[in-house]
Length: 286
Image (cartoon, rainbow, N blue to C red):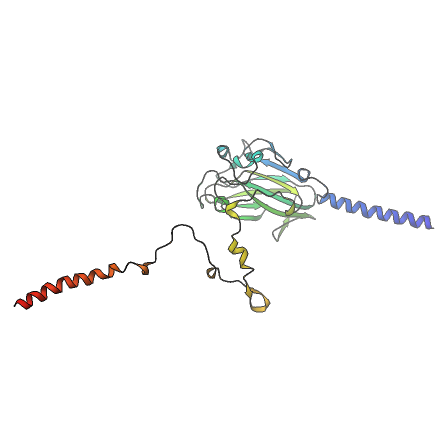
C-alpha cells in the first residue's frame, strides 16, 4: 500500500514538472536570445548575423514587392554597433501599403521588433506612416526623423500574445489563423518603409536596447519635477509649473527693450532747446 502511494505521488510530481517544463519552453525560458527568435529579415539587404547571434535572412520580397535601397550605407548610424549598422543602412519601401507574413505555430508571449533609420530626409513631416499588425494599428504616425533625427537607429517594439486561437495586442483581440501580417501603411507623407524586423518569444525586458542617444536623454528639469512636486488634491501630487524653475537658455541673451541708453531720450530735448533759443533771441531784438 505504501509502495503504491509512493508511486502515485512520484507520478503526480513528474506530471507537474513536465507541464511546468513545457510551459517554460513555450514562453522561451532557458533559451538564448537567438534561439527565441522565430523569424528575422534584413529588409532590402543580404542575410546578416548580429552581435546577439540573431540570423537575419535575405529579404524575401526582393523582386516581388516594393523597392530595396542601400542609400544609407554611405552614412554612419548613431546608436548602433559597428557590426550591425547594415541593419539600419538598407531598407525596403513601397509607394503603397506593403508587409510581411510571418507564420507562428505555437501559443505564447511574443515581441515584434522593427528597426528604422532616416537616411534621406533632413526634417520631420517628410515621411510619416502607420504600422499594422493583422487588423490592429500598433504604431500611429511614425515620423522617424521626429523621433531620433537623421541617420540614427530607432527600434519600434510591440508586444503581443497568442492563446486559444486569439491574437491580443495593445488591449485589442482578434482571431488568429496561424499567420502574423506586419503591414507598413501608406500615409500622406512619402512612402512607408522598414530597415529590418524580427519576431521573438519573450517579454519587453528580453529585447536588447540600443545605445543611448545624448539628444534623447531626459532633461534634469524633468527629473527634478517629481522631487519639487507639492501635495495636491485627493492625496496626489501637484507638479510645480515648469516656468517657475530656473532654465539655462542657449544663444545670446535677448536685450531688454526697457533698458535702452537714456541718451536717446535727450535728443528731442536738445532739438527743442536749439529751436527755442534762436527764436527767443530774435523776439528780443524786435
